[in-house]
Amino acid sequence: FLNIDGNATNFDNFLLEIAPLKDRLSFIGLAETNVDSCNQQLYQIAEYTSCYQSRLFLSNKNQYKSKGSGVCLYIHNSFNFNHNEMLSICTESIEALFVNITNLPEPVTVGVIYRPPSGDIKAFNSHYSEILSKLDGVKSYLLGDFNINMLSLSDDNESNFEEAIFASGFAPVISTVTHPRTLR
Image (cartoon, rainbow, N blue to C red; front, side, top):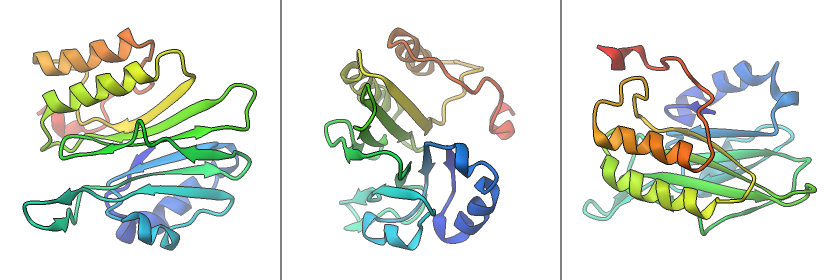
């Protein structure tokens, strides 16, 4: 997973960074692509099929959010998959894109989730908990940038996020600071 902070400026560097790893990655998740699904063909990775979710549409401005929006998944071509619309959502508090990988002995659901830092964390937790409840009993992988400092858990909303993860049988893989500036 990577918060790419804009495909237009960072996608080529991203391709260079993953080149040594590419043969070992079954799926890749990106957040903040700033790309609509209609432009996904501009950003391809050899041997992968992309699945992009359109950026957040701001109805009050009658336009798509230009920065800090858009999630996508790249699924290795050895897998068949379909978009899981029941789990996918795009609001001001959460962007989530899910696919079901169908050609395995046991189906697998893969999702990429992004919580914009300006989004309402309480609304995010509500959507996130609903997604987790729908994944109950389903072999799943969740990738994402949640913009929540799990080393601090200074308020109830942060604690509720952590509780939802563990109560659903998931566990964070990253256990170190990823944004040192958040510790100031």
